[in-house]
Image (cartoon, rainbow, N blue to C red; front, side):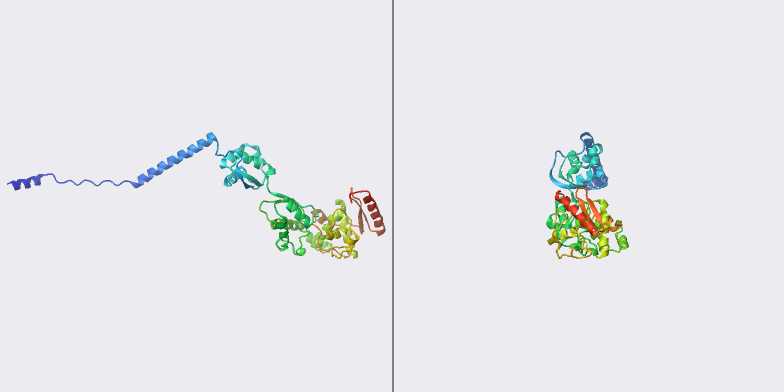
Length: 373
């Protein structure tokens, strides 16, 4: 009986209940929550930064900074462009520091295109002060006067830029790299155009000389030298040679085309030009307009006392006004000329040798009482 009772009690007890499985965490929800938190934090930080900038101004360094860096202000750059350049090069701490200052400071409009050497980690105010002063530009200025010869041009380049004499000389020793016209026959004399050149930091001697040659070729094109030389019955090279002689022989602008006419008249008659300027080119004489018997006896082809026709090349770099005179000579019978007043530049022109001798005596008389010749 006990066994049945036991069975019965088991039979009537409640059946076992299965517990539900634990829920898995919702990963997507968690990620979304984290992202939302990050966005809220970032937005708060950004808002704080903006509020801080509004209250305290943009991030900026203090003082004059240290070290150095070259900053280029390009043509057409505005305040924002300059601000970005300064930040990128480590001059200012933020773009806004300089940009906001430039919006309200009239000095910003005085900044000129060019290169400036400034310090790094500068206050925007200090950076603006440096850039607004054109004297702080580090680019060189090379002035080549009209009539300059290669040796004088080398001196001018060294004086006006960071290039050394060795660098310029080495570039000249490779004339094939300078872009010279074929008719120059590898001789840069006369083809380094006289002008003022801006030499940016990093410019090589070859690049600078190339720009001088390119300027000469542009002027030749602008003045239509080829067509006008053909009309005169001479070559483009002849025009440059004649112009280079005029640079040294004429004292006044009004006399430039007259000297050109004397040269052409003598060439037409087969006469030696007898120009002291071509003789002194060989002897490297400077300081006066005369030459000695020894100089005039030189066998150099540049000695136009000993050789008829034009010298084999230019004797300097002619400017635009003398090139124009060589292309547009005055009309006249003159075969001789000589300055008779070195202060005013008065020059006597004549077709008579007897008259010319009288003018020469007048010139010598003037020079005996003057230090100008």
